[in-house]
Figure (cartoon, one colour):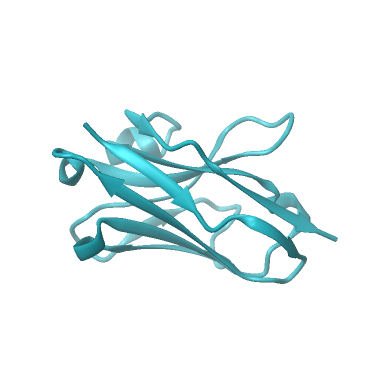
Amino acid sequence: QVQLVESGGGLVQTGDSLRLSCAASGRTVSRYDLAWFRQAPGKKREVVAAIRWTGDSAYHSDSVKGRFTMSRDNARSTVYLQMNSLEPEDTAVYYCAAGAAQTLVVGRADYWGKGTLVNVSS
């Protein structure tokens, strides 16, 4: 019932900025909160940020707080992840996911996108 399509990944250098987009669609998409996760090679999947369709607050993990910002555009059913001051340790496949906020922040989701690769070189 929910489809998620990420875009915007690529190869960048340390200190660069990048904006990821996630287009969300489906009859019930408005019932779900959305999140960004990432998984680096050999690492566990990590929640990066989460947001609701209503309100103006968003959750950001300690590892990205102050550098990354999640936002939404309700009219386009799209969420974004603005990534600034990128570092090599940010290199990962970034996934868009949908679920309940209280479960997203502990790594669970009902729907997942296929991911987009962000590669930050030294």
